[in-house]
Image (cartoon, rainbow, N blue to C red):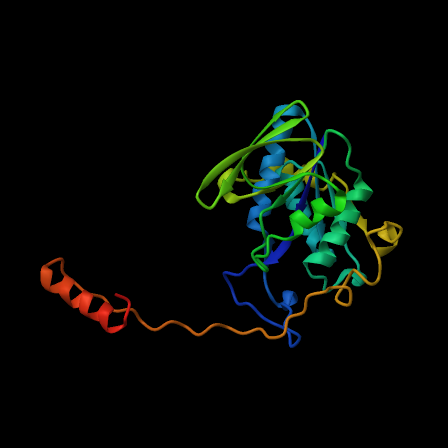
Length: 266
């Protein structure tokens, strides 16, 4: 059994965010981190490894420097890492990205007992589309927004978060799960794991390695193969300073009610 975790290196949005003239992010000018929800997926895979002894494989699509992120995940306890990288893949939207990553997962191979995991969504796009699209292209059953995961034989029981509660779903492997931050607390790298990370393989899958997969076609990958386009990108205007009312007496309540009535809120 193996767990394949799809991860993404994203800009650290706590700092300055730069945008190119075509509306795409200028990733080269920003610090990068591992997408937070993907870290929860990695931790879920490592917990299954602790319980069952399964193999954990991490895979990402990105430029060559993304190898550093993969080394960090190997230091956390992952066994193997795959970097999907090539100029032909640049500029891909969610549809094209899922085509490419699914082809990479096909290259690794998904067998009867295997699980594919993804984070719920990436903080740079917030679409929550790539994981489900990968499942569709791999013809795998999927459960999204996993808040708890238990494996019993070939069955996976997932507590799935909804807007107003939870639902429990049982699914057979192989399957794809998307994970949320409420699922767990990702572990830290260990000192021994950091040393071992550089003895573990990071396999690069370029266009030549994947071009024979039916999912890889020049018309469905990269910027030209992306059906969505950014028409305009802008920073929303900052909100003005709020109004503070002090006191808990009837006069303050009447003043608040007057303000709300004047704005036609009540």
